[in-house]
Amino acid sequence: MTTTRPPAAASTAPPTPPPRLDPRHYEPTRVPPEVRRYAGTPDTLAVGRPGKVGLLELAFEQVGGRTELTGHYQKSPLQIMRPLYFDPARPDLAVTFLMSTGGGILQADRLRTDLHCGADTAVHLTTQAATKVYRMEHDYATQLVNLTAGPRAYVEYLPEPVIPFVDSRLYQRTVLTVDPSATVLAGETVLAGRLARGERHAYRVLASDLEVRRPDGELIALDTVRLVPAATPGGGVTGPAVLAGHDVMSTLHVLSPLAPATEIADTLHRALAPHDLLYGVSTLPADTGAWLRLLGPDTRTCTAALHAAWNAVRHLLIDAPAPNLRKA
Image: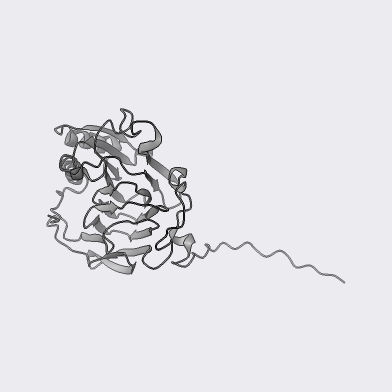
């Protein structure tokens, strides 16, 4: 007599994540072809060697009425100092500086940062200085940022500018996973190069993807940037449909249920109007917020405009001005 066993029930447990130093953890699942075409083996330290994989994992939770760092893992060259609390309007806000011991991004670097901001947390995340992307002769570099904002969290992710040096190749992917009740302000600024040295759009490629998702994985918005100066004769990124001859590009995404998307967009418009810059403002899908992109001639002008937008949105959403971050 032959018996057969009923089929085993399908497992509903989530897949086990790969170990931190497994390439499946720190390598992007997809690298744009504009960057991937430079893949190769460096004649110095290769991908995955000591110092080439930078990992940073931070977890924030509300403890005793203010936000505390409750989880922390770092692997050089990425690191932080302890959170600071110096915003007089929001003493519960944990101001955290993301740092690099390497001084910049080198060829074959693979960097990954995971930021978890739990329910009711208030966090400001920034970098201690501009991110320098150095000259590359072999391969390319990648930078992954995964930011999760839990219920009713208030999170600001406003890093300093990215400066791509001559012949550099970088792909960065930022994924914002935002609870419907959370507020996230996420900014990005890119320079044409080392402007003080007259270096403009001499990099090979700068590719960037920013995704906004809900906790169930629903895609809310996707912002894709592909800057490839040599793609067309004369430097293909300086035309009127791209950067229009400007040296600085800044972007700010504001996701929040604390005000209607149209009101957020109108606030951004009013904040930028006094500044002599090219800019555009639009609402995001499903009344989730608004975003802006601006072009300017130098970092001082664009930084002032972006700060004005940040300050105006802060007043609208949490009735508090933007703090002085004391970087100078």
